[in-house]
Image 1 (tube, helix red, strand yellow):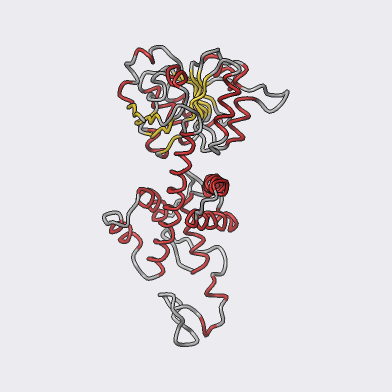
Image 2 (tube, rainbow, N blue to C red; image 1 turned 45 degrees about the vertical axis):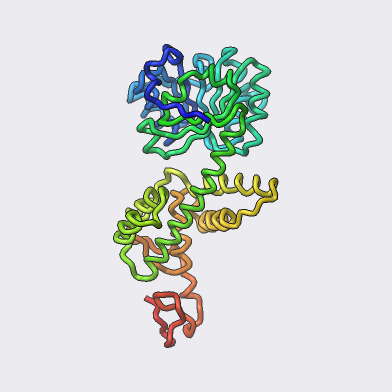
Length: 350
């Protein structure tokens, strides 16, 4: 394994005058495109969302009229969409109406796939692209919108040596660290799958812990301050709990994303006959949150499921959308603030 840093991206001869195309100008893709542009790499962007295109254009970037036009003009194309199905449709088309970018890319150019996908898929894409004289780098990313915008994302890359050579330093143009994890596609996606296992469990645990503290009477802001300076903290706790404290569930990464990603994790575990009880429990929490109507919200909205169960009031004044569990219990078993049965018919319900 080796690690390349972005410091050489703007000056490396392997990167001189080579064009990077970015398909998917969402929270991560826009940051990647802007970082590459800022570092002096000729960068073209494309997205179906005109507002996203306008942001890139306003920063001095070029936006093309189609994914095919972008692919035909780029030495490497970063495909930063959400799902495997979207990635595959972009690469190879979805029938007669759309041929896919592989049909128009210059021989010897590179596709860099960055979505979180089943690790079995990139080797299949690699073989299909090779038939057209194209290279694939399996290179999912991590770091969130802020690190993407700062050019500090982590890239988990695997590919044949000739694919890495063809990509040159173009991945370093948008990343902070590029890890070369293996000489075949699929290894990068395997490492990203493990990362998403941890990220999904950590977010769910952070929401559960904050809900517990609020239910027990702790001040949410003080709780966050203490935990982030104590051994119980995690990167996800520090990053996601501020969304809860602000009462702002505008999605940077939505609940539905972790339904997909932990689904990939659990599917792989079933194939390997490997038990993942923590991932399975977290997956159920995301599913429950989506079933409660919060699937399109920020993944920290998992705490709303706990609010619905316990009746706690979340920071920002948000309460459960419907009656919570304690309100549905007979009076003699109503819950006290600490979750123990109350000693009177009124119980200890706040």
